[in-house]
Image (tube, rainbow, N blue to C red; front, top):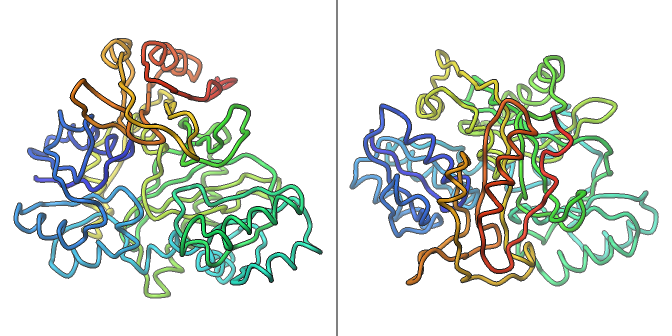
Length: 420
């Protein structure tokens, strides 16, 4: 098989790493990919948002399966374009991807289908939102309606924080069109976890659970990020909780989308809060999470290509998965200042020494310079490992990190700590 992977981050590098282990695959392309992916794939200089160009490439190269990593191509309708050309692709159509691309759509959808989620209100006007704060109960959560790379969520404990958030999102246009509408939610207490499932329109194939660390700073402080680390399985998961999530959230979501003529094929990601009243949906994503994908794939023993192709072919009926009993962890090495302003172009050293300790390193924001590997993004590298216990996995990861250097490198030192 020939595979095309669309994207250039740590999630795409992890997908490539796992897909390359398939005996069915003899050629992989990555568009545009990153320097860490060069050993396993041919890099193609096409942006993930260049939908027509990607489809032309897939047609010319006779690609057997295209796997979409990031959300932007899905929002632009890459699956629709590929489907129109009878090109096999993993991911939801543009209208199905609305479950991620419009939070207001997702919230109204959940209300209609009795899917547990925090209470909410939608505002199209900054003045209306500001007026609401005069009588609103705090704390509350404010979300930009559209795509914001995981950074459009504000937890506001008092009125002046909420006013500042609305100013940034709606008046200053921090997220462009994505912030023209906001969703304001009740604040939930509990533990967050991630539940990902592969769907073929009818059937649901749940993956191993995970938990990510969204806050920039240790102790879950600071602004939201795209994710500073992850562990798998989610520490709070049990058989009863797993079954409850499937019955009250995942199954009614897939059935409800099918009823609305938005048959869901691809990866359905549910970001959950486990409350006293049970699991509630904080957000849906229409693609693999990042960095949750890294820790989940580290534990997958089965052929990922069988699962992805089963989704694209609407045939997950006979697919089974074998999972490592070992746990896994991931720590994101980022540039100082992320998720706000940060510098790039710093030389990265020590990767081979770190890898000799048994960690996997997935590139997220790197570039090849004249003098070696350079940082080129907010999230630069993902350092991952598996082990029989979380303590062993995290010890391995942090030992590996001790050999990696680049100027202004930051990372959280509390990922997976106090976990068995």
